[in-house]
Length: 194
Image 1 (spheres, helix red, strand yellow):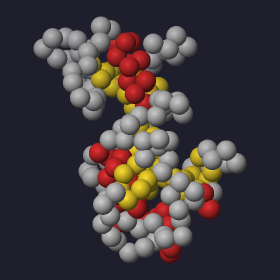
Image 2 (spheres, rainbow, N blue to C red):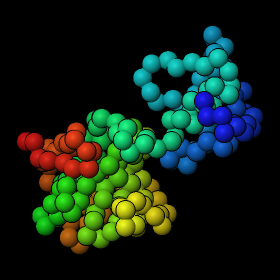
Image 3 (cartoon, rainbow, N blue to C red):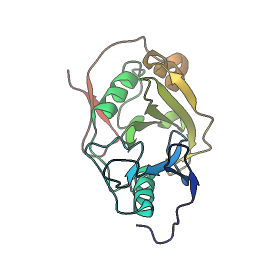
């Protein structure tokens, strides 16, 4: 638990507690509850596999906050099926003149999102798979160290065939269906595998 952070709560109408100073990338606030037969504390919208329980409300709130924090650069997670799907759909319309690993790259943001870096344009696009199987895309300008700054308002309800136009504009290729894989060496490149 982070000793420098204290959870702030508001009562949730279903008997749990909103954790108002926890924000998920989707914009939703945190929520913890012990309204379960075993009366153990849980994160209400925990999408992880398994049953994660906590001894106290504060312990559950700290755990939910940890889930919302970006991973340190040296602590990259392995690509999952969501990352692979998003990478495939971006690659469908990538212009030929952009070389993966040179002009364009991918970073894993969390379990449901990747960031596509388009270096010639000094832009990045965070692409998040929503529960409705559409995407939320947030465009940012990149600074000299390739970090996103000046994020725009997220675009929600984006379909997979719209990703190319949003990211590459008029340079986007027509919809195709190659299989791609995020490389496991640096998390920022992809290659066609079939």
